[in-house]
Length: 473
Image 1 (cartoon, rainbow, N blue to C red):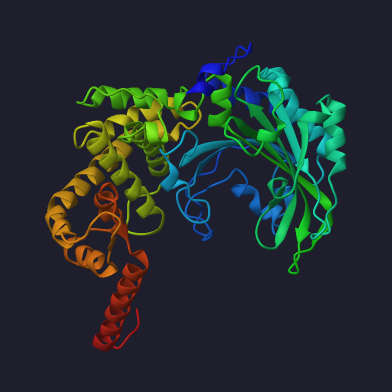
Image 2: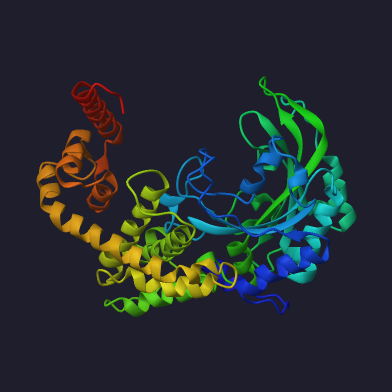
């Protein structure tokens, strides 16, 4: 934990996550921005492209894509958006717990300027002023990156942004060009544009290390400022547009770790109370040590992080209207409850059916920004309790049959899709439950075969219904 030991707090009076979030909104309101509340993490029914809201730009993507008028919004906006990345293209679920930065639920703060409301210079100055004057991060801990150009796309180096940073006072040795890392795109075609990022060196007093930017976890990206001013064409070329939107993103959890002088998101006041509650209800007398990888040999600290993260994500998703189900977003919620329960009990010595005790701690940490969590607190607790009861009932019913299915397998072998389907069809054991048993035994799952067999079974069932009723479902 060298990084954590070398970090120092800064002289700003801002300390807590609540203060940091509030300072961000207040600063941009003082600069003429209108605070637009977070949208739900459950997308509207009309948006079939997402399981969950997964970025700060989601509620504005119609403007960025050119299919919605910017007149529907204030010209200058500040937000802190609830986001869940646990499915689809942006899926961090399987990485949560394994390192010190992946989260399934996070808050993305951002400021926006639509239809040329302001340009690159103002956007850069606002970001720099907030970090160095409001938060008071030392300038010699910061680096900035900009788009270095790409001849194959027909896009030249963004020297305008480079020169703006020089005018602001950033040393040339701390202004670095990149290509893919500094070009934002909505999709294979459509809206796009160069971006500039601000990075923070977590280790104090080691001098300039530009070679570590975008290369080493000790230098972390804090802020991404996107200039959406172009369109990607079918042939891969990029054409510039007359209108520019400024779209920025600043992860709250990461910024709070900098403000509080700690080495990871999980050491901030957003997570420490939850981890403390896990320690309290554990019957094993365990304490979180912040270990990662091989030194976390038994996976206990990874389990602490996973359980704390999933408690947050599940609480927010339920408060916003998601419900456990067998598919889509509801299945992700169910999977997170099951994973949290499994790791809490098997790795951390937490009694069965105790997961609901984490909900009040989550609510207290977020209710000032998201009062819906307090309004839905009892429902969240009851839903988590019911889901955990169902999960352990499934586990108790199916473990003996699982052991029969794998009795001839050894570490490194694969559980066939046919075996998995048998467990699912006969006992209701979904692949995520089987995976929890398989992982510590070093067994893999043949998901492709399982999906094929399950789809065949569905098709046969539909065909039987058509034959029986004479109508298609």
